[in-house]
Image 1 (cartoon, rainbow, N blue to C red):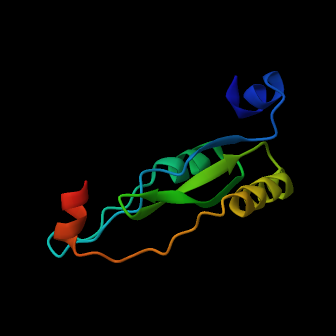
Image 2 (image 1 turned 45 degrees about the vertical axis):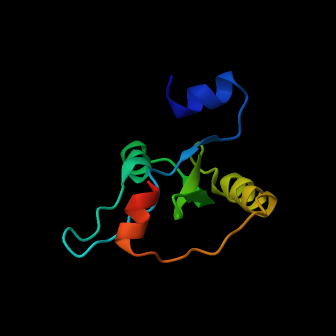
Image 3 (image 1 turned 120 degrees about the vertical axis):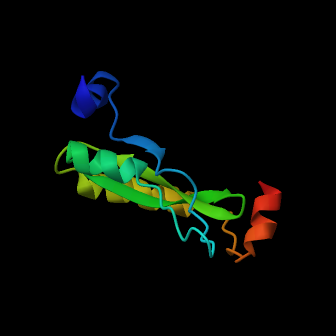
Length: 105
């Protein structure tokens, strides 16, 4: 079916998904271990994607991605902007020591 088939079948402008896991923490032993899940989809499928902040998980940010058909960047930008404006419960990120972060998980 593919992205275009799903958009056509269900009369959608875009598909959405979490951008990946929450942002990663960095520690002095292992460094950072970033998540690449959705960015890999976007590169593999060669489709336009717009990503904005969605919220926090254990105090770390997570994004939401809007996917669309080829040449749909203006529509995706409008959808992402509308989501960002509607989500008014923004919180400041707090940098926490690693032990404190692991204790809350």
